[in-house]
Length: 238
Image (cartoon, rainbow, N blue to C red; front, side, top):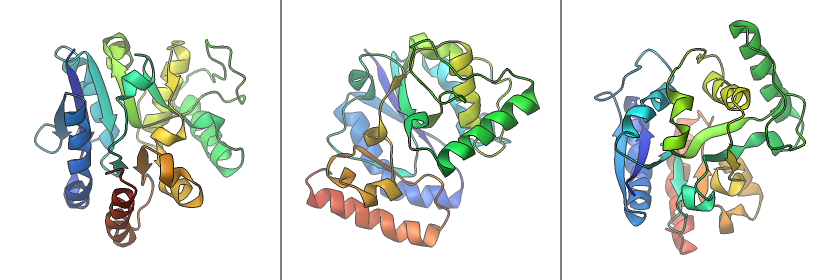
């Protein structure tokens, strides 16, 4: 079984962030017998698009690897985090945000889906093959943390329809998953815990991944990440 953990880092801000977060991502890879790959300016294939477009290199990597885990650069992964494909019994896995509370989050996701379907001429999908009761707008996966295997390669073969509007990369992937009735295991928020949720709950005791997605106050962020690393260390989780 050959495994790969990869992350993506472009630009000086994320290269500086990587100095804090990549050692822990690399340790996660080493603990689970995986190779570690950073996609940066030297090996990027889609420089004109959002960084998540590099996920379309996955089929090439799957020629060598049986299982792949993607972790964003702007996150901390705790030392007790299991291999994602073990947690999902080998199924493709992500955090399904469509089960989060209604309100601004839900309205934003609806807008992303409507915009995507309107601009690409796609059908508006709101159901899935597993018979789960969903909101009318369907499933919405956070692609900052992904586990996948060779059976999932076809999702990434053709980037047609992918676009860089808002969270277009996530909306595209969610739509494609529903369109193809592709089975995805919901990892739950403990595997992709937004920092604001980590602070407001007991997740700091249990969450495996603390994610700083959408935070653009980099002065704050570059102070907060080291503090959170020390907090996890004090809990014996780094």
